[in-house]
Image (cartoon, rainbow, N blue to C red; front, side):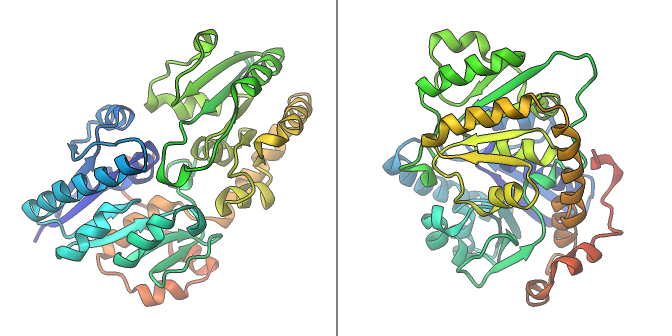
Length: 367
């Protein structure tokens, strides 16, 4: 009997998180894979770059009321989709599939790397209705459904990526700006326009500057905008000498590859995964917006210190020794189909690492 799996993507990071698992199970005839998303151009570009078939359900709207309406709209469309296609297992990072699991036979697995304190809607309306909430073990959750593992979302697609800048290549820095329009972003912010002017001015002393931004840029900054295709962004990041911004995801990605990464937003110091990367492995550095002067000083010191990259490379290797390739874990658990969650909740870090030390998914998706 064919096992029907649904991957629901609400953010570009979800595409990267689930990509290897999607491609793995597409290659096995005993599984039928479905992918759903919203009308988000960057996700659609990424899916099409990998020739992954997808279905657009619902619209992503701005504002709290808009987001609530989007959830209702998508709930209805998703319920019909799941029933029509007889989905047995849904993997996601949001709320909608948790709701659908209440009214259907579909099981819901969430992969969530945010802290409970910054996502009250997830804690109240998603976690309780899912069979498992897979959580990096540096986070402590309220739900009894949490399954803690030694890994991060970024390690599902960057486990083998460590920065090795090309000798003699162009030296450049990347600035990443986000829109802060997620439900968990209400009341939070990042770099101001004035701070951006000072940051660009400083980074230009050390090479070319590129900006990638979710929000509109001032006309004077358009010349810095990068037009790299989303599927090439990680390779572009890997060869940067530094990445600075108010993004959560891209700063964590840079840190995971060993690229010096500086974050400036009001979440700084308050999230467990970035804190782990910063405090235990010294792979990134975070500052509140009012600490901007300290940020500029730290960037200047780092870019004048040629030993930093080799040190960060060593820390990247230590991170990989301590953590799982999250894609391997995901693929193995889906293959198991109905894992014993009671036993999984009892596993320590060394048990997880031992469990997957010799497990290799198909070679076609290893890169």
